[in-house]
Image 1 (cartoon, rainbow, N blue to C red):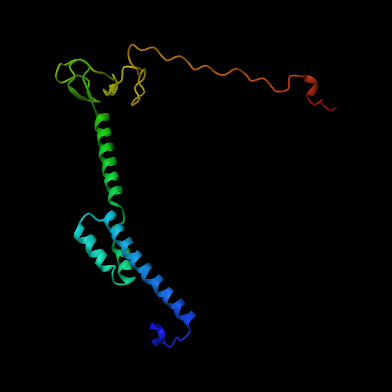
Image 2: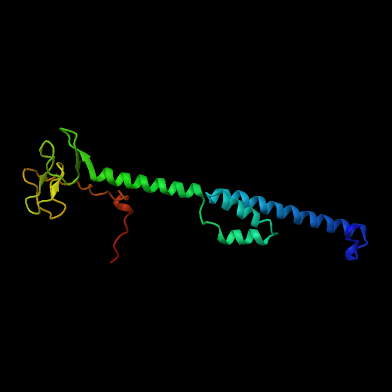
Length: 176
């Protein structure tokens, strides 16, 4: 009877319109709930979350406006990115700083001597004066041989590979 106002007197058609209206209301309430949950995952301030939810009570338009102005990433993703950045900075700091093997004083990777105990940490290249690691045989910066190191052994070359054809009769005969 409600839709008889629109001129619909057929009971089947009236029921179909009622179901359609019910689906639209359910869809609208689902959009309000989605806006609320999405705003909670993206926005830290509860007042702004509440404002976004109230704005989504305007049917369909509020949710569309929220989708346009919402933050581009989730709070968890932003926190994870911040943690990854801090971890990368810590790794860079660890690569640049070490400790002296004698007194455990913090030293940088390019120190030749420990500033605390004055123990020699690395030797300097005789050509460019850059610090060299003890296992290096050549300076990677200027290609000068390190004094007192013997040249590395030449890598073994693989032996000549045998042909798959071991039988000479399989090879094609030369034509005259």
